[in-house]
Length: 313
Image (cartoon, rainbow, N blue to C red; front, side, top):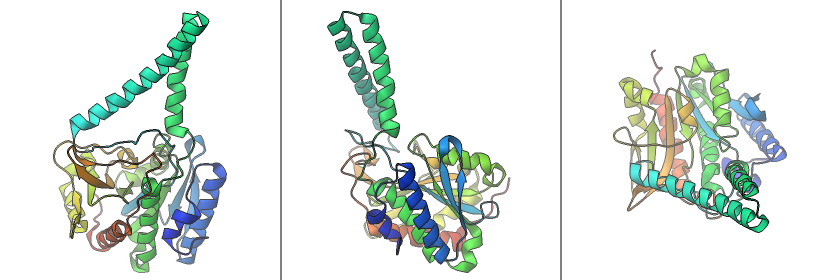
């Protein structure tokens, strides 16, 4: 049972197995039904189940978040969305470590058995095993930011949005984001005509950081009317700020990339490499700032009420 959206953090801290996900969906559906929402689970590829709240065909925008729990890694999934060289360097480092570990084990197997063909096979097998563990390995029980923060923020927006404004938005909780954006790809396939035009506001890792950024897709940047409307949700709030990042390099790999008019929304910290996201996928992912939830709830509720405009194709 959920009494408030923040209860997700304690009542459903892990949403990885089939049973855990079903219990979570049942609780969310019951909670939102008490608020007057219509909810349904939509099945998609590889057994995923997206939770759809509202009218997916009639809404002018979607507010989304993924609810599945990531795998725990021995190192953080460091993301520097606005720094090309730091982003590239970290990806190359992770790839190098993966190859060294895999072929190191393969070399050991070949040396111990005297069979180098076997060693080579072991090396290649280890690569695929390690990749699988990174994507669908044992759940990370510490996932306050990735993505319990997005789930709670979505539910808070749904809770506070007035009934007269609910027709403007459909809320969607995606499954299997961590396995390769499978839930959002399935939703896009099932609702292609509607999502060709809808703005998709995707909340992913919004709980840890003072710099909340909106990363629009390339197609959205070309629609100046729609893009400009996003600025109604922006502002400076003491040490925190919500801004649209539309110029220069940026990459934020999440569900919004499956939609033409997607917006990735995340909270970032600032360091020598610029804005960054860290701690996720590790036991250190324990920070969920309620201030961020409240700011985004207020900003996106205002946007839905006053700022959202239908996209013209």
